[in-house]
Image (cartoon, rainbow, N blue to C red; front, side, top):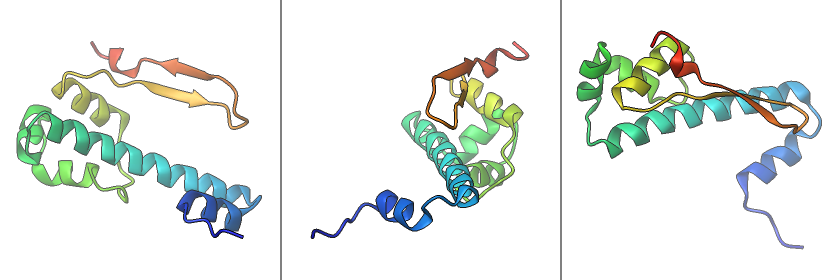
Length: 112
C-alpha cells in the first residue's frame, strides 16, 4: 500500500468527523489564503510593505501583520482599503458548508 504525502489528505484522515476541528482548519485555511493573496498582489505590483502602507494610509508593521497567516485581526474595512490601493475589487463569498452553490457579495462597492 502506497503512503500518502498529501498534507490535506493526512489531516482529513486524522480529523475524521470532528466538526470543531474541521471548522478550525477551514478558518486557518482562509487566514492563510488571505495573507498569501495580499502578499502576492503587493509583490506583483512591485510594492514594498512600506509602499502599500502609504497607499492604504497605515504603517508597514500593519501590512506585515496582514501578510502573516497567523494574524486574526483583519477587518473587512482594511481589506477593502488594500483592494482599492492595488486597483482591485474585493469579493466575499458565502459557500454552503454542505458543498452547495456560492452566493457572492461585492464588498468593495461599500463606501464607493
